[in-house]
Length: 123
Image: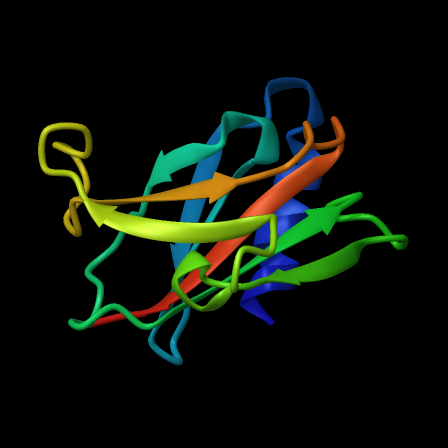
């Protein structure tokens, strides 16, 4: 449900869509959404430790033709791309409570209408 709410909010901001956004649902999940072309962003919110996250790409975000592609964690991807990793990055993520960044490694440039959504368990 949260994914739909955030996606609709992003779709309504098409002219000044943020490079990233995040929301916490009542179920204890923090979602961070960013343009796939950014490649890296800080994870927002108070996150459970150890991190428990899922990442996927969403094409045509917030539209009736939205399609999602699950991304494997690079630690378990066996060399498959795209994949994602998280890193504790207190120097880069100074303003976020978790101080973790997420990076997506790709074998080709992403489409313009592709967004990455990372959902992590909240503390």
